[in-house]
Image (cartoon, rainbow, N blue to C red; front, side, top):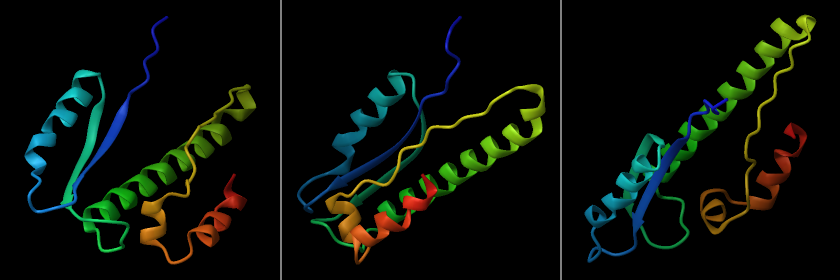
Length: 120
């Protein structure tokens, strides 16, 4: 039986200097689609270093967080509605990982990560 799972990608394209051009990175989007992924969003910006003023990155993170929350709630509803029938519902979602980008977005990345600990 074939696996009917849907592969979804959000692509964040960033260049560091004005001399660089985001249009040369369109191949990333094309190759992602060619690999069978549904591209839920493409976020493009010019920004340098780990800093918080990246509106496109903030937009991507917000969309990811909303999607992850929706999947978690859908899984709970399915489990509650079908548990008596012996049907189990599970979802696997990646957690937050400490990176330079996270450090550039939140003031204390370790404290932010610790605040998510009760969710797992």
